Length: 132
Image 1: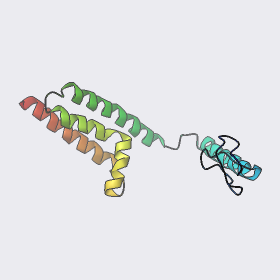
Image 2: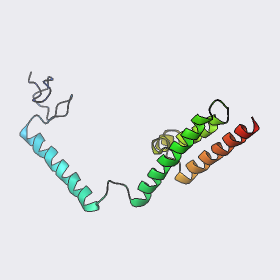
Image 3: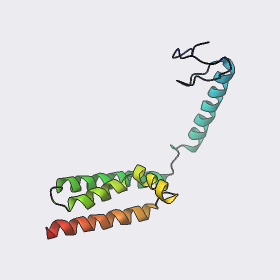
Image 4: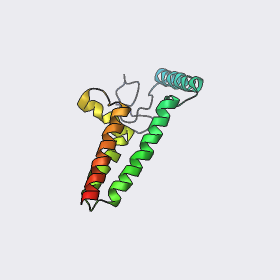
């Protein structure tokens, strides 16, 4: 049985790519991979961006910044129970967490809905902090 030219794993004679590392195992597969890479590079170069438009990128950056602020605020008052909702609101603001909501709801929550939930959690946390 032949071995991968990159990692040495066993590959079938008919395999175009190594199932372990993905290395092309013949010239035809190598050319196909090169064409795909060139096509993606041209596509990104012509769009002049990383796949996100300016609005999406700004929202993602602001979401991370506010999320970190909420998390730091929640952790700093954590001995008080009011820190828990603020911490959860901060975690909710992170873009990957918003995308994970698609598993529960079928599609990610809208940014505005995410921000509203985080703000409500922060208000609840502030109220609990003040009252206790």
